[in-house]
Image (cartoon, rainbow over all chains, first blue to last red; front, side, top):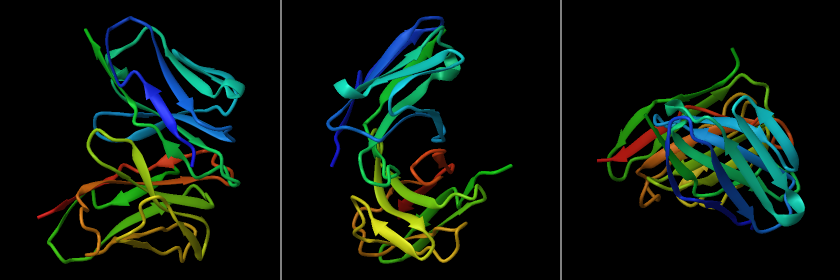
Length: 110
Length: 112
């Protein structure tokens, strides 16, 4: 099956700083998503982005499918951005069976 | 408001017992999933269902069972055959093709 690797595994930022999280995947994909897991365990879908670029407020994501990577940009970070960011991908026929990376744990400090 | 409801939030199981985790969605999604998360790890797929009365094994199905008798419901049973069941269990649903992926708030299962 597809392999998904994320980097860095841990990241500490001061409030207001910008950051880039990376996701590499081992095969072509028909589904690529970014999720944020808050400290209480709730997972929120940030982007559905099998290719191209999307932006939502201070967050944006870019997937370069031909080079098998995706980037999540966080600008002007806030303490509420803390948590774990997961990349998940699929290359199955239904595109719905996601394989998750091990995540990037982000801590934003004052 | 549409969403996914998991219950209970916390569950304690004695050795040798079967327990069932509930997952209900009112998003009208065809597909539903169960994932397991261990501390500091990513999510691993246990079972998934793309349509009522049909489900498929994921990567770690041994010791688990599911049913999909209604579109809205996808309960997971953790059987006594699961040797290390202590984990955080997350249910999700999506539209066909994997868009609109939505997670429940999870159930923390502990073996005592």
